Length: 441
Image 1 (tube, rainbow, N blue to C red):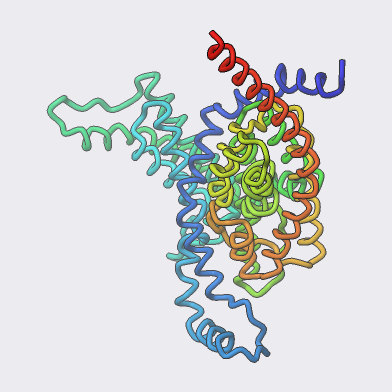
Image 2: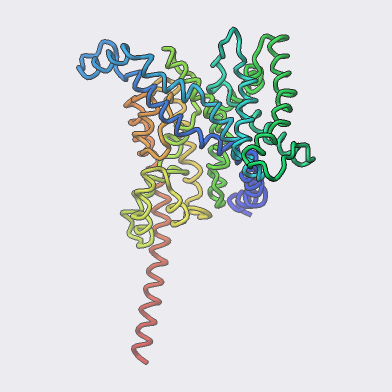
């Protein structure tokens, strides 16, 4: 049995079924939905951070640059307020969104579940001291606490409802009022579980609960920001794609807490004038690893457009515009790239090469690390430049990666094109023969 056949047997019999179960697991789906619900706020907040930190040196001779620097310095607090109310409250949005999604899965009242999750998270992350509420853990540093509070809040409501531990109101009571009374026991449950743990951590260890949880998850975050971990994640995602499973949804769903924690860390460092430290973020994945979508197939769409094969040329024309905005399902399934042994190697290798080169470029400080959340559908050079705080080198890095991607995809494309041309000639000959036979009769 060939190496390829052995690998595909492992993927089909073991990896794909496991990934399918993980991808559809209710808590993983809820976490993914929670981050998706926070995305619009994070994008707006990121843009305001970029406005507050112009991509110009203080000694620039550009009038526009000097004007922007002067405006940003004079109005820094006003400009950054939306950033602190969005990126700075990231975990608040995640707590509500995750609980809302999980409650809908269970058929529970999603709004009350989201509010309960918010209460649990604030009790754990932002206790009031001297009539002041700390905001330190409402951003990226509190993401893991927000997820735990969201899941526990919904599971508590579900358990109480399952064992009929609730306050039942007469049928004449309006539904909204009835739902508010049904939430009383879950609120008490949160007060008896989350709040005592939070008080214990503060009194005995002088730590807020999110700080303790971050200490537990710090090895995972640190390991996730290394090149081997990044390459492993890229490999799994694209192996799943080859098997016809949306690998990005599964892998990024698991990595989202690390993505957002790292991005929030970089953004906070920039806001305080310090150097960024984290590499693996959502923009890193979207604009360096997956240029044009999973497998970094934007250059493949360009190759298809000029193909001599009618099939590939048609797919290229249909898929190049979506691919420019990082949507490549038409190409992956239309070519197809999925389950195509001829294109298996570049599908796996190209994004791993991109990840490796981008990792070293960022860590050798050749390009700024990501500090902002550009929409993932932004064209890769533009999205990378925005996310790197308008660093033009980020756009140049994307173009360099695309040139390398082209060199890797090209020989495999030629082989596949040759196969399809032979099939198209054979089909044309068969059709011509059928026409000739019909005419002779």
